[in-house]
Length: 137
Image (cartoon, rainbow, N blue to C red; front, side, top):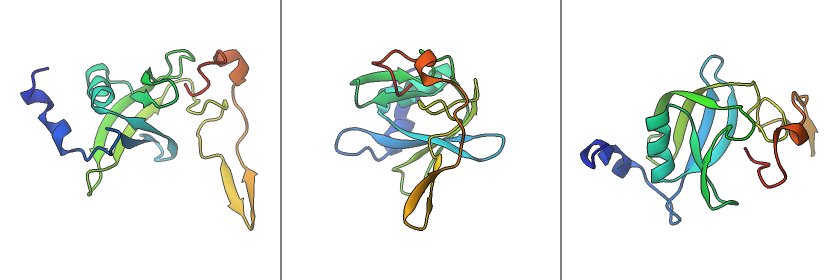
């Protein structure tokens, strides 16, 4: 891609660390699967591949979602919110698991009164999906 082809990245309001929050939403049912961070390179790479690529703050590198687990996110649409400071990815979650805990989504705890209640089962054993240094795949 040429620099001109990448000008759309200039419209994103990156934070002081050069990152923007990215929300992954299931394209078929609208359920929010996860939130991660993107930098310019990861957002550009996401468009190039057609699969979600995030910036891993803990690893300090690009992170192709599913690179170890195989649970990749096929990106159908990328949206930018009204303030330009949050990206929404509409995805198909291959493998059915978006969360490193082995659940479909990262938002599996619901506040009931004054306590958090887990309301989703583990679908895949995370110990079998990831090595100890890649728990946020």
